[in-house]
Length: 245
Image (cartoon, rainbow, N blue to C red; front, side):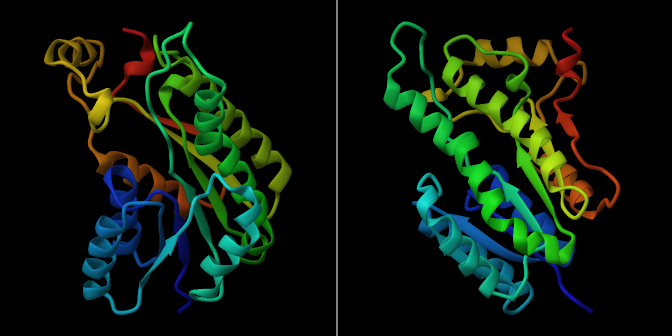
C-alpha cells in the first residue's frame, strides 16, 4: 500500500505537534517542519519513529523566506518521493495595539500567517497535482471576528482565509484546499498570557462552556485530509463561539 506523506509547518509544539501525532497515528508519513524549536521537534520525531520506523523526517527552515520555497518543498518531497497533504500551521501571534503598529509588525505577521502559506502552496502545487492531494490551512475564528489590540494579526488571518478560497478555485480539480479555524483551544502563552478573569469571560461566551483541545483541531485536519469531495471550506472549531452568544 502507498503510504501518504504530510508536510506540517510549525509542527514541533502545541497544535502543530498534535496534528503530526494524529496524522501519524492514522498511517501518514510526516515531514515535521520547525524553525527554532529543535529540541521539541527532535523529541517528537524520535517518539513517533519509535512507534513506526522511518515514518517522520525533520525539516528546518524559515518559511518567511519565500525564495527558499522550491528547495524547501523539494527537500520535503525527497523524504518519500511524494507529497499528499500540506498543513500550513506555522504562525506568529502577538499584540499590536492600534496607534503603535509598525511596518515591521505588519510585515512579520503577514509573512508568517499568509505570505508563507500562499507561496508554499504554489511551490507544492506540482507535487500535490500528481497525488491529487490537498492543502489545509490553519486559520482563526478571528479572521472574521477581530480582537482588540491584535489588528495586524487578524488582518493577516483574514488574508489566509481568502487565500484558502482563492487557492481552492485556482488548484481545482486536482488539488483540494480547505481551512480549519480554531477558537479558544490552547491558551496563549508568553507575552500573550491571559488573566484568569479574561479566560473566564471567554468561556462564558462559548456555548459548550469550555475551551477546546489541540486534538479537536487535529481531528478536523484529519477529516479534511481524508475527504475527497470538499474544497473551499472553512471549518470553525470553536465550541459554538462563532454563534456570537
